[in-house]
Length: 270
Image (tube, rainbow, N blue to C red; front, side, top):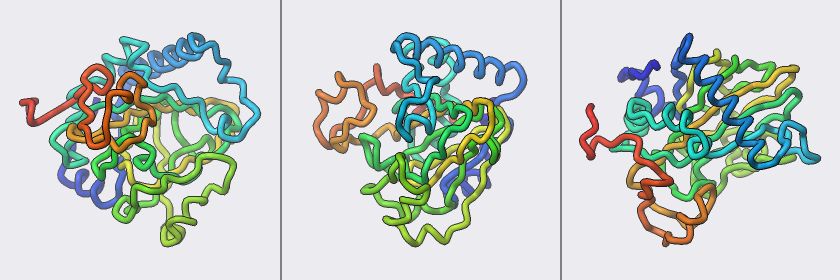
């Protein structure tokens, strides 16, 4: 894995709210991730007795297939993503002392899948933080034709925690009703090769195009929270057994469900 960061890369992330890591995975390592995630998604769907590869009769179900917390159902996924070097990268970019895994999720855009509207992630999370960060890995080439990501650079600086955007049957720019000043920002088109990754601020506006091809566009993401993140009262993707024990303001420090990936304060190497 390409896990080295330069000062210029950290500065770019802080300025723009995202950073592409080219060739994060290559060769056999990329093949391993592709095989493990694909098989894990298949097993996840079969265990849930859901035929998600057949589109349901609503708009959002045909944006992408989403499988959350594969690390809990597949030890191979767990081994891949509970990686201190990856956590260190996230902590350095977010300028926090350490990070926990909030959750992972595989996102598969099927042939002819709908676009993903412009949205911001952190308003939906069970914690509010300018240091929320996601790492998104392209398991297939992500192109304009098959649904690559788009970013509105710098929007993380003016984003609030109240509105995240609607991921349903509305205009791709519905978010601009809440942030009209963002409508004039030229989007960054993030075409990526398989094996490239991108760190994404939890407060930067981003979207993905439709899949106008006959092939899948596979991606896998890990959402990280700062190690001192506090509960805001929203359940979101928290497990029920974690949620019922929490009060607003509690530190989200459940080592079983929200594992600590990296911490400078715990003595992890710099």
